[in-house]
Length: 226
Image 1 (cartoon, rainbow, N blue to C red):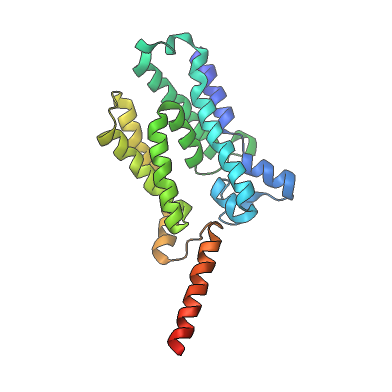
Image 2: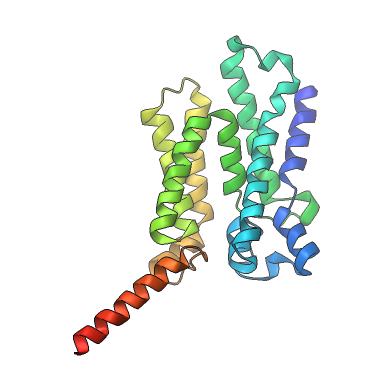
C-alpha cells in the first residue's frame, strides 16, 4: 500500500507541466500550440528562448530526481543490503514520473517526450552514469546544436555505459537501459526524419560561433573574388 501511494505521488510529480504553466503565466500562450507542439524543454528553447528553456529543463530534471528519490520514505529500501530491491523500486518510481511527464494529468494528458525527466531519474539512481550521458549530450549539442540528435546519442550511450562499461549488478537496470535507448529513438522518429531531410531546427545557442563562421566565409569569398 505504501509503495502504491509513492507510485501515485511520483506520477503527480512527473505530471507537473512546467513548460505549459510557464508559457501560460508569463507569455499568455500554450507552448503546445507553437513550434513542434511539444511541451518539453527543447520546444521551450525554440519558442521562448534559452532562459526559459533552461528553467524548464531544470524543472523537468528535478521532477525525475525527486520522484525517483521517494524511496527514502520507506526504511526497508534504504539499507545497504537492499540495493537491488531499491534500484528496482527506484526504476518503477522514475518510469512513473516519466509517464506523468508524457501524459500529465494537470495538462490534459498532453506533455513532452520525457528525456529531461528521465535524466533526473538516472541522476538519482546512478549519478556517475548520468554525468557521462550529460557529457555526450553536451558534446553533440556543442558540435551540432541539435537537441534531438544529442538526446538520441545520449540515450544510446546510456545503454552502452550500463551494459559494457560500468559494473551494474541489477538485471532490471540493464533491461531498463536498453528500453530507454529504444524509447528515445522511437519517440524521436519525426526528428530523425527531419535530420535526414536537413530540416531539423537548431536551438538558439552558440550563435556567436555561427556569426564568426559567416564573417570568415564572407572574408574568404571576398579574397577569392580578388
